Image (cartoon, rainbow, N blue to C red; front, side):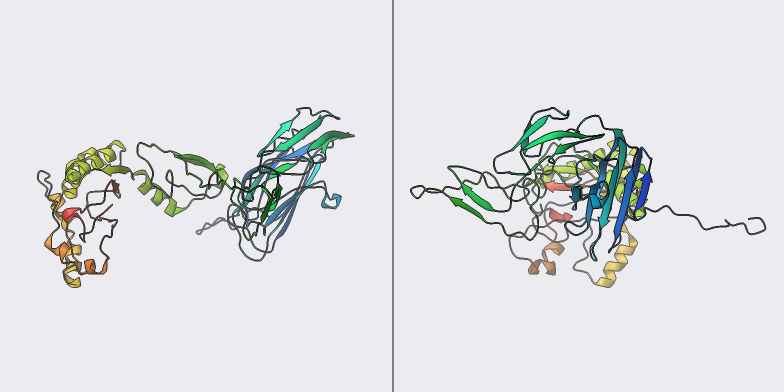
Length: 438
């Protein structure tokens, strides 16, 4: 607008993912849960209808999926819902496999309850011409016999030991005009919740194995053998999912864990964690950039043999940071001097004196007038550490972790190092309280 005060005539528009919609004649597109990638609202019923050209089918590929399991449910129908041809009913946080229609219309319905909401889903749809039955796939934890996909071709399925076939073991490719489909639908193999077992041997698996078992289930298995036999149970393994060294992850949220978490990681790893999402879904979070800045200068120096190597370790810490370009090489001498200074402990002093000394920032001042770096850290605990009143409250034999914080005015960003000891030991004058540290 003209004049001395220039403003836009309308407020800045916003782009949101709506609840429901209709796509007609489009060969491809994307469906997002309401508000995606932010959590969807409660008490929703959203319906999307995809209609492609006659003779074509619709394929759905899930880019991200996270809903409240068993409560916030996505349903996909082949055609309109009144056809009663439900292709899939989905909830939870596992990304589903692709879904393919046999008609040129697909209906997607999303229902949420009154309570918990999550980040929702992103679905890519596409259209293609149907000339044969789609690949029925191989069921997880099962096998398939037969590769034909022409009308009249049959395929047989079988499950691995311990799993049960949900559906028929034999399916046939059927053609009705321009529609190609399997009759009945391809089966799946599941680990059931309970059952009656007979025979000389067999397997029992927790429900949904190898995925996590569902909540609130009471599963009973009954094993019956001849009267003159006994039953022996051998636990093959109790499954604990070992976290890998590095991952490639997609989706709206997730967790990064160190190798073998929650157990100790082993030495000699170089783990890279790659997280990718469609660029239009990246969230500009200010605190995320701060976290990444700190994360990029964080490293692990594993298994120091003895405290006598502290001076050497400090130099190693600094060398690695210079290699990672965490700070300028010309700061090497100053930072080395600060790390080797005798630490200040305030526990036995009055709060007023402690605050006064903290304001003075002794480390910063001494670093600015440094001379040659000398290791002032003593291997023997100081008297003030041994007199620390906090020590009396801790049981004997306790091991501790220490967070050591200092200030250096010449650093432009935080300098962080995580050091883990092979054996717990006293760290001399380095710590506030004289306890063995790991």
